[in-house]
Length: 145
Image (cartoon, rainbow, N blue to C red):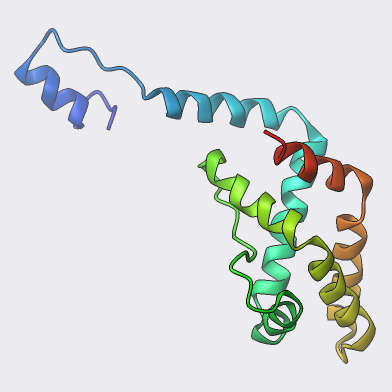
């Protein structure tokens, strides 16, 4: 949209030379948040853990069904992290906060009962990362506002 040679900005400038292109305030805020997070390893680790959790449970129908068994028919379910829209990440964090114990139960059951050694190991690692005090604090802090 904002290119110089063949974009909407260029076409508008051709029609009206006095028109000024201004970035969307939401987009600018998103860029600021992206840059701020890049400098904080704890927050990066937090979001990596959330994405690993979603990938692990979401990439297997059997594991997703196990999680669904614990969450019953709740409308709140895990969501994939959106890499560009920070405002949508609150949905993921809220789902994890509301379903935290169900997620831990699911990971525990997989770690104890799975026949696949790699699956047990991965479930145990993700569970340890989820029980990390920093992750719990970040989830609660993010959903306070």
